[in-house]
Length: 394
Image (cartoon, rainbow, N blue to C red; front, side, top):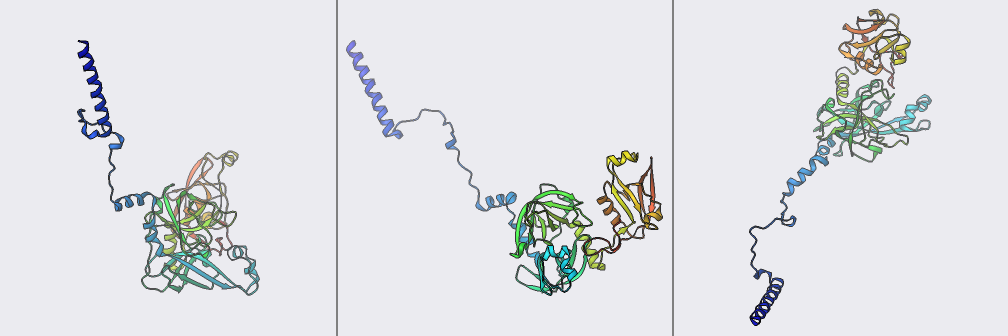
């Protein structure tokens, strides 16, 4: 019996050894007895995506080549020149800022940008790009050049409209700047430092920027898209290539981009453009008052029951406001249907009024609110740098 058991144990040992050797060297000879394979990470097969589809998906959130392709042909370079002939002009700080110090009788020149806004050849740009220039030339991205003439300019909004006589002009599509939100992607297109057309990207950093001392009427789009000297008058477009603003100014200590740029909303630019094309000037309302922001300290000092509004500190004798009955000490709360909480809003609301047409201005007078009917006049013509000639009142 012991002999049989010894033979059996030796046979089992040899069999196990054979199975081990075979499973190691020839695993395919060994049958699998598991009922179902368990999928592992290595068993998961990748899904094959067509190249075109993958590129399209990636282009949606991060690529702006299509927007640039649509908008770039409509953005032009503007080359200006003038022969300096007067000491007064050379000493003008604005002139020196944009064109540097010039010698007696030496020519001055500048480079800016513009946007073709219609196939008829109208070009929208900044007033400071073409102000006081004798010779203005527009250069398209396809290499064509043409002399431009000034249709009209508006120093108070720093906008101007030019006209070029060329065929097959690519015009930009207008967008809705009122739909912009902080964080939206935007592109700035222009000719910075005269190096040639350049596209930069960023986001909308803020909306409704005002009281910056750049223009009389301010409602800027702030962006961190790189804007440099030469970008002035160029296009700020959205991710679909539609015009959202006209690049105008930067905040900079060095003269170069620091991530804070400002653009005039296309809603404002379009209104100014249409007025300039129609009549060569922008007609705005004017009532003749000296406004000041109402602060909590002022409200407490003068025992004013409202906390927001615009305090009238002076009224022009025999002006529209005086004739309507507005008095110093009144606090303007509304102009027409527009609520005003600071002087910038009052300025824009009054400017939007139609001269000669009666409007209702709601004021806080003491403890009462009074609705006053005022017939605005036309705002006096502005000087070159945005201040009304002989008048700095609203």
